Image (tube, rainbow, N blue to C red):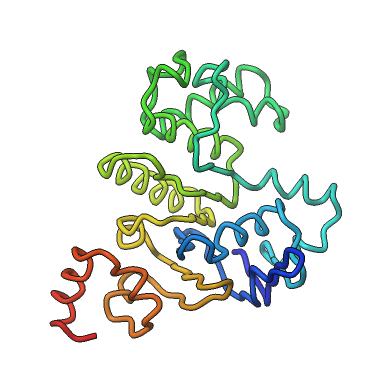
Length: 255
């Protein structure tokens, strides 16, 4: 579990995060949503240590990440997996070598053990047979699955995903969503996903945090969204005519 208490982040005179308090739950897909510029990316960067909060607490199972020494944070990051908006694979390495990369860097496994672990992760994302290919030889969706395999190679407790469906078609996006959801439950990870994808919100949103102008405006599950009376949330979620029609069908036209 990751607990955030009264988190502030300021850049010179601009206050971007304004006293955010929330909990990201174990074994669930925790989604951060909000308009561009709302602060959700800054929040995630604070969670993984790319930014230092101005004030507040970030507790990883009771351990205060903000107060850790540099060495302690390096060790803490070994418990984290990251999936970037772009897959961020190494073009000069094969698929197998990409997945092995964190194992080569941070594990004490033998070469054979590292290869076996990497192949297990590739099997988990349905990519056995692609291990000898290079990133330029596979599709964007397959690249994202390689990124997921690499992110879980060290069996992390915490998985962070920045716009994992960016640039993917709707069908492939659903595959990635289902994969992240199933892996989260299988390994009982605390998974945090930054997303604009409303299919993800409605499909796998087990714990959703809506950020508005730097503060937590709303928190709940996907099933609560259709009946929400929070105007800022509904304006954001139901921006498209299709989603408005879906909401009206569920609520009988009531706002």
